[in-house]
Length: 82
Image (cartoon, rainbow, N blue to C red):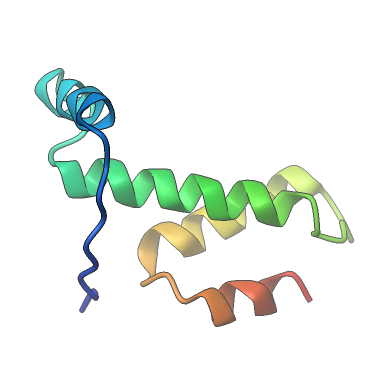
């Protein structure tokens, strides 16, 4: 999977916390921490706008699987809520 690269400026305190997550083995790299954080943010924002047609828990789990396997494209994510 090809991923785009972005530059993000974060405070020293946030970077320290990210490094702690990596050092404890919860994540393998800073990038993994940030990718997971962005996925969770996107999913959190989607939960409020999803129209539940069936079991909302299953819908959210399916979205999480989709987001974890694919490059994050905000236009595509917005289509998921339709």
